[in-house]
Length: 226
Ligand code: BEZ
Image (cartoon, rainbow, N blue to C red; front, side, top):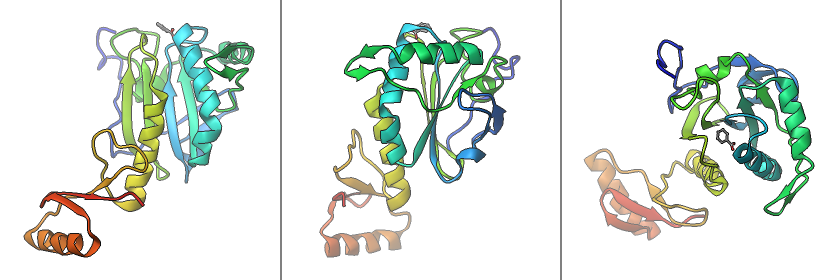
């Protein structure tokens, strides 16, 4: 794509409201993100239907759909293809077995963004192609705020363990007001946000003494996961 500005491609930013849209999907029309109010959403794009890497990703998303739902999280997919292409591809996917996943049913909505309206609102069209979305992932919280964005190229399938880790980490951080260290995994120690004033430092020292937290320095305190 020569000029992303000319094409009016926008890039939603972390901490901002998820752009709204109405779209046709394989589960009927959706009003996004309002239809999912009160839930976490993973909105993701893929380059095209009937392509190999995308097929492995859809099989994996379908196999993890119930698990994401158990975290109060809904999946919404998108590509720049027609609804009939989507329906045909999802039916084909149901006949496949791969990587321990057998005959997966894709029950989450897949947006038919043939006019590229949503792709342009979400920065899914980038320099690789004028017509295929990149592999974008948006994590949106129950208030409709964008919390994390990922972009992968067409040639690289996503890491689903990382997608799940991000969701669990975002939920933990929101629920407990903690930060999460490098390579954090559920069950590992979390970090208390750093103090911002001299009084906060004194309070933190007292808290560390009382609770037995591990303080490496005044700005770096670890707490056991609950
Ligand atoms: C794929 O999903 O395999 C794919 C899609 C577009 C370009 C390259 C690979």
